[in-house]
Image (cartoon, rainbow, N blue to C red; front, side):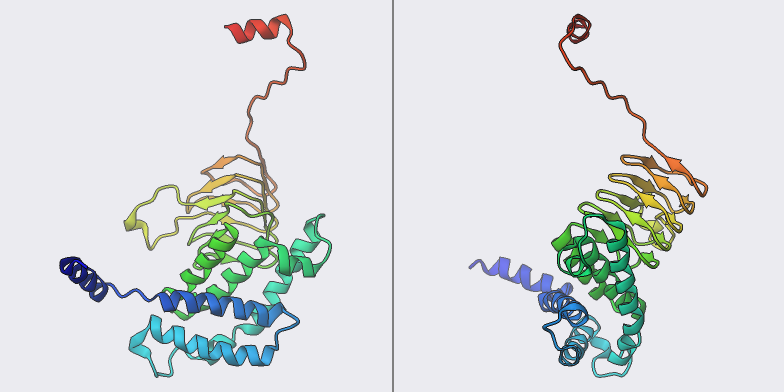
Length: 270
């Protein structure tokens, strides 16, 4: 092996500490917490005992300077569990009540990528509020890898959130989503411009109560507000606020020919 290359790799690892164990254990924590909540074959008490061990392990890897210190304790995380569990049940109920294809809540827990992505986001959000670095991003990126749904743990999402199908959904860091919002596949809540100096400003839109956003709609900008009870149609590109009770659609021309008429052939030959 080339000694020079090995030295370069060594120097890189000394300069930038990357722990694959942190990534793997963050994923393990996510899966175990999900099973503790919803898997009937998992003993919740035993699962939470194991979760405490994993929590302390990933906390100490992410923040070696606080290893063994009482800050960011397991008890701090556990305080959020009742609210977290209630929020996830409301999300599942929202999916069941709004999706005619759903046959049972059990199906939602087991088979709906939107629910898994939302659940993982809400779990990661607890770590984000605790101020622990990397862990929340690793958790939501795991859900992104599994479901194709990318929700930043810094986003603020209210109760009874419903993502249908979900593939390609992107929700940026400073997005604010209020209660009873429905989002379909391919929706982007993004920034109007991408500049590093805007890191600490609100870059992503606000979606108020009872809004429905249909497939492949793109809503951009930190000052953009979608008013409550509004409907954003599919393929819409929105960079300005809309008032409550609005219906926003994307108009495009579709021509359908049922037979090859002379006028049709003339159009094709132009």
